[in-house]
Length: 309
Image (cartoon, rainbow, N blue to C red):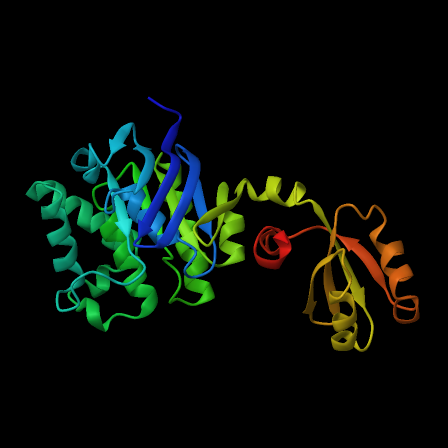
């Protein structure tokens, strides 16, 4: 058995002249949470559909749970779970009816169905709403129901496509606690997101842009190996100062965060604070400037868009 739940090499998917996924190479370790981080339209959903066998690649190879896709896709279906970005269960059916239907799809016998459904209703705090129609649930309740349905058959590998895009921060936090519980049972999870705080929770992740892989590794590794320095600048007139700093060649990006500017400076500048003061002395000499730890958002900015230029 391979140490990786997913191995993709040169994975590419084209729709006519448009390339949605471009030469993607990833290895997802078993028993871990692996993230796809990127903006809408970067290829996250298409990549997941390729890895689940729902789409056939234009070129490249995919091995999932030691099965080659698309040749062995039928053997894969009963071993994975998939939670789509949009709520996809039957809104006219009750919570319990939806779960019973999914259990029948996966071939659970009547005793196993009843036991597993009761377990999930309790775990996801839906037992008191079991007769309620799915269409009348709140966003957080629909999310819990969808996760219960995706994990009903205890899949070895769980795919989650932006599962928290329509819920509040409290529900997002609780959802992630449940993901770690699932991971602790030995399941592997691949989750796509555009939230930086969620990406930092992953054991490792890939940053995608325009269908291309821009960075891959643990959040800690990505921050350590960013190849840029981060400086915070305080004081008055931050909007005007931002316009000035943005024009400097060695400045990658400038963003205001509350009462300071967060400035990304190319790594070739060995003394970024002294360098900043020397570039615009009349505006920097009286300001509080300090070197700070990079964040995952800094990594994202550095390896996508203007940060790559």
